Length: 238
Image (cartoon, rainbow, N blue to C red; front, side, top):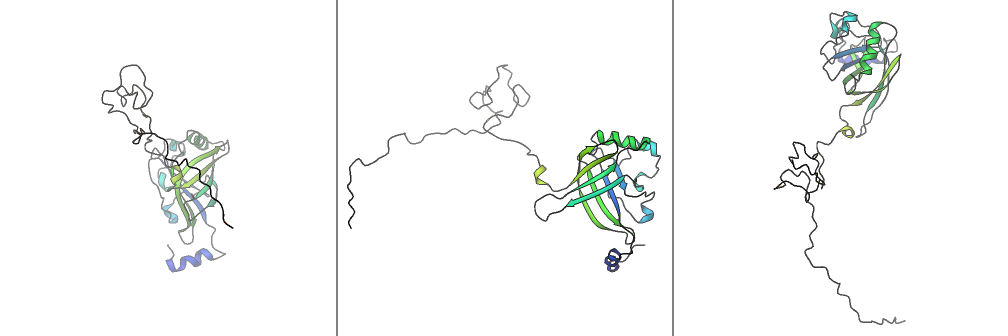
């Protein structure tokens, strides 16, 4: 049963309440979904938990034989945090530690999964879940990147979704042509490489040149400045 909103703050503030658990939902670049928690959760629906991401069941689930993949949270999330949050354009980041392998076939598959960089760039949603209130006390969404992988644990770093420092430029424009000589975009078949400049472009109309022209033109002829050559004596009067 979900606690009403007006009682939520009280339930979260009580010292005798059940300690929150950590939930980590991941959706990798292949569309596979993963659900990790700090404790075993055989049925998320029974505890009032709705997974943030649902996707394709990974192939290595045949080891676990879970019929309802998106309803089970595996107890492989060891630690979460610290989280560094900012109200400015500085990125919000946090660290996660997952159990990598501990002898069973399922954990060994986790090692192969992370080593293969399946989590690099994956979407994640982390929640500190209050079991009494059936609400999230803290929630963060972003992208994952792999920090380190050992035989026991895998450390991941999460960054917020809006992170302009990671954005890549769609295109770069300069005075030199960016096309590789002889490529389809270049179009030159003379087998005499140019110098990637507008002047050395060998196409008739230079229509494939991808840079911009920045030729300096002297409009006025270069001459001497008009400077007076008369000697002027300036006596200071005291």
